[in-house]
Length: 305
Image 1 (cartoon, rainbow, N blue to C red):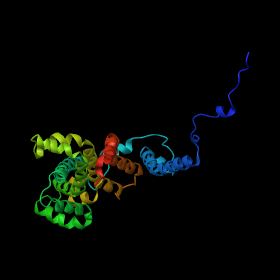
Image 2 (cartoon, rainbow, N blue to C red):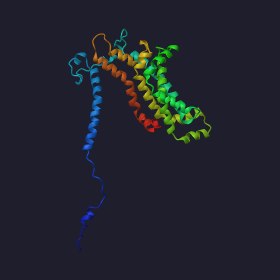
Image 3 (cartoon, rainbow, N blue to C red):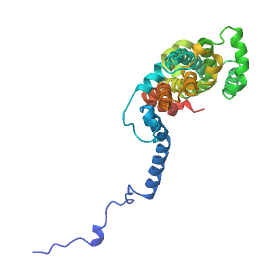
Image 4 (cartoon, one colour):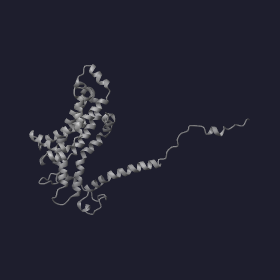
């Protein structure tokens, strides 16, 4: 019987070849994830201190260890920050400011986004005489420092009897949000296939028909981007709120400032921390709920142009 011959050694080495798998603990990965971890700790540590401080009583805070978790968790600082903290003669906490902020936020966001989306749609798809000049003026308006416009706006609001009112502040936020939002919508509508617009024109659709039936359904991501930008900017605004409103109509950020900087009584750091966290909840919730759509809107053309 013939002896079975083994294949040559060189053939045993033949086969698919490729780069050697990289180790998870390579120098590059250690540097990358180590940097990310340090940055995360840097940003999360103040938030951690705020949360644990807001859940402590003042006797425990006076012990001085700000990083220690609370021994006896209490929500009394949160209740006081919301409904009992005093600012001057008013002792209703942030609740009144929260109501005012909602009354300012909803119409400001709705009006600015509605007007800016129509502006961007017109500038992208319906060219008219002077459209480029109009667009240039809007772009310049996006870079004008707010501080240079404070006094002229005071005069304007006084003349139209809106100084100190919520609707005066709504008008200010709507106007100042218009340039950047118009730029976002115009760039987004420009990135959409032009054939859809032409096909709708051939089918007899007019200005508003194309906007509501073609453009609007395809523009949900950019509307979410605009909403997040406006909600964040308007809700966190302090300068306009303290200038163009009065104590009865102060937004939440102004109320927070008055609570934290109050000189009456003992400095209650747990109440101050709870009030700060309560003030930041609304934009935080908006980001968590619509974060994916925000990324889609940015990636789909919000910064193109």
